[in-house]
Image 1 (cartoon, rainbow, N blue to C red):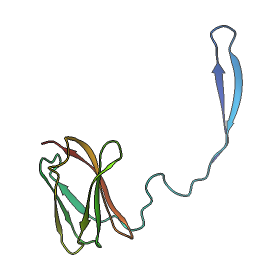
Image 2 (cartoon, rainbow, N blue to C red):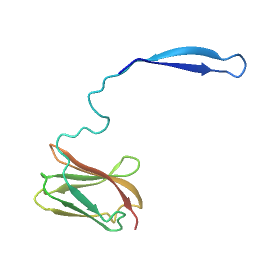
Image 3 (tube, helix red, strand yellow):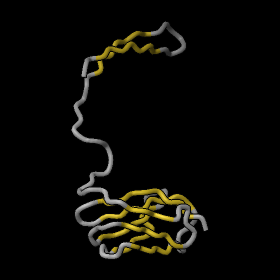
Image 4 (cartoon, rainbow, N blue to C red):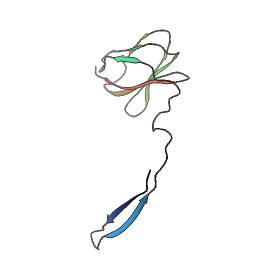
Length: 121
């Protein structure tokens, strides 16, 4: 990284502009921003999307875990245990209102999937 200098002009509409110099110092970041994952993200298919009554999740392999669905306000609206030995999971969403949701699948060791889904009855 290198030091960078910027000039910013501030005005209040009544007097002449004031000029200030700002020096931006670099910040070293060791990781990204977001949800920390404790394992590898696995291969999943989530369909249909948009969904009207039943969501199907097909996966190759994972541990036992939990499936959670969050509404657009970040409130958990559905939670279901998952048996990792089953490669096909069917989730009834008939009790959820139309809208945009976030589906998250996780186990004790990993967050396997986080994806937006659209519910349209």
